[in-house]
Image 1: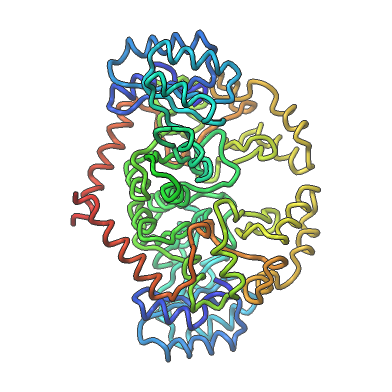
Image 2: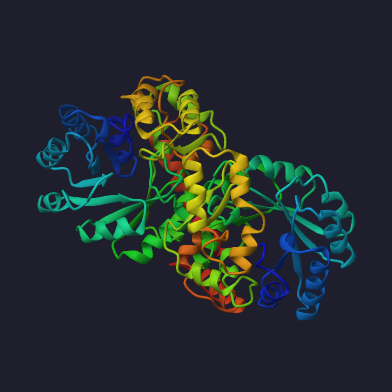
Length: 293
Length: 293
């Protein structure tokens, strides 16, 4: 949720009854501190922080999280062995995001309290094995005993129930909340997502780190480069620095990197996070009744 | 289900309470006739025939199906406009396999009675948009009014229920029945599937027709060719003729094309189709009770 989930979105989700997460991956250390403090002021409900473990200022982020007495941390993109013990010694619940059973087992061994099993459908950086939520969730359930939160392809109450039928205890919803009033994303990007149809996102840049994004002019350049067998270095140069910021935060729809999940095609409105959460919950609760008929 | 579903598997599934399908795509015209007649002798339950519309002897297959008074046909890989009317004039129920809402609408307009919405997880030939079952099924539900059968990533009762929660009226199960006692696949192939782990299948040959298969020595050759930017013609030459037959029917695990779904990783036994169907059904029925708690 880089460039997406600051204190406004996190507190709105928590106030509505979800567990809001601050996405720290795009924040300087002092920016994270500010967002945590503003989030505390905006909600008295629990909220968490997502930390990509490969983040350059990771030590500083971890210290901020401990100092600010954050209770729940979601870690991703890295080895859970490195910080899980430290976080847990500080009374923090640790959930690690994984794309395979193998990584789920490692997270469990590292002492994580739960895992997010994130399928191929998910937006942004993604696993190399391309396992979808329908296959990944039951597989991770068979591999570990800690609770599983499903992610990837979930934007409605029925998709949430579907993932829970597969064995998840809950779901992590990214893309749908990214296209809320309170998310930090540029309006151009939110409108671009609302305009997408099926097949408009793709998992690409597999030579570097696979990432799901909207097929735009920047993607066309990647595609052309890949078609002429560009090297990883050439692709790195093409990607350059700050592409995601350019597209998602600054609203340059043509030249930016537009990270969003495959479920983008069924997101067709920008609305307050509380409305999104209520609609998902109502559909979920109504649909749970279905098998009673 | 090329090289997989002949009269033995189709009749076993129908006798167990499913709708068995004869996969005609790998059969000469006279072989299809023989399989239909043997299937009739082996079951008094309904069964159907799957016909890939791009099949070279399609006219002959359609005539055989009409002559033999088959009641249900599943069409795939081609334009449903071409034969749907003719089949329906002969009292045949027509179901078309699609990988997108766009193709689902075309199938509905062509007069099909239902569609199979087949996700990225599925084995063998697959859609270009890479939409997974979790996203595809709700999307197709929004696009058409005819019933939807979900396929791709479904091998257990809970996956079946999960797909039905998404809006499917039923499911089409390929890979799980492919690894049954009665399927025509070579034992080497069945054992290879049982041995797969997560990430062992991949959607490849996207320059030609995307196909999901097991990563074996043949796939390594594809990968190397793609890495040096081989042309479509070079890939066609590499693929050659009869690769699927070689791997799946003749059991050459290294050099053959081993088509199977991503759910391969959770298939860990070869057993009679009736056992497979009963286990799926029992898990489904038991799990439907869950929301009652």
